[in-house]
Length: 394
Ligand code: LMR
Image 1 (cartoon, rainbow, N blue to C red):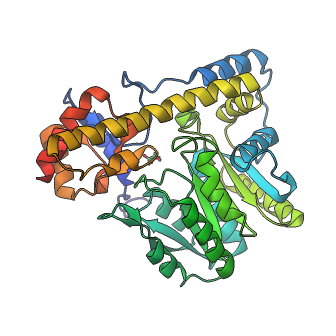
Image 2 (cartoon, rainbow, N blue to C red):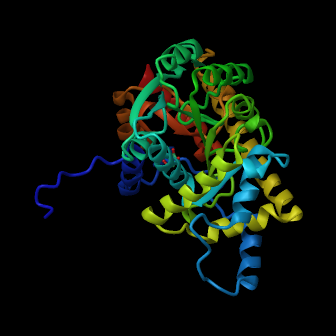
């Protein structure tokens, strides 16, 4: 049966993770996959998560099924976390999903069920898995320009020019905050203008929110997306808890549909359940139960917010230190952009050859294009990484 099956194309980030693991050099530096590391190089279980797990272990008295769209209380708390306590929940549909990727997949299937000929527009560049996750459902994929490598700015006018070719009900994937891989988000003014533009053209935003709280704060990070979605009748959101709750392997995410009609919301809710049933039946519970426990308890929620702030401040501090080190070594402001970007990543705009030199000569691993996981940097490595970067780009 499988004799003629071609070898699969492996996702660039996953392939790199395997390469890092296989490298036996003790001085290797892994700046590939987006995980947060503390100043000892560990990715510890957050204290609020540990406490919620302890509570669950003593209080949970059954492992029976929860349901196709998971725990309604988790979904409600996630919706409020993103859209605010004032959000009218009767206008939303939501489903607990296996990670942000699972949430994206559920929404892609929902789009396909409603409009199989819809085109999904992805930013150039974007997270490499977007194309596979959304395209393999059967949706057409188009690309819109997003990032200017020379100016380090969003190519907003070109973005709008490209999207002016989109048809009504086409879907535009936007990174809610902390754009992956560029670390460059739209300004509030651009989010607002884009909302107006999308409303006029009848386009649907699909907002991938994987780094909520890693940019400038929980409230600040949703300002832009809120300015956009209040102008359009229908919005889709795929929210991940992997990074901000540090529950990567537990696979916790939430799909949210926001509409202007209770009836449409209910129809979408039914479809989200039916889609889950046919692809994996029901989402994993443990991580979502942990997140729900945190969000439903004021003391735990405050503890989590403090831990999240610490992570964010550490990453922003590393950005500043990295940019300063490069400024001191080069005597130029060429790399200052690193300090001004937000989220886990910065995109250095390296060629394949430069990336290979970093890997082969310096045991430093970065993703294609020169994306580095700033959240995985160690202060003590910054000088060596900076010198290596200067060496391979000179
Ligand atoms: C990343 O971009 O490194 C993360 O979103 C992890 C992943 O699954 O690719």
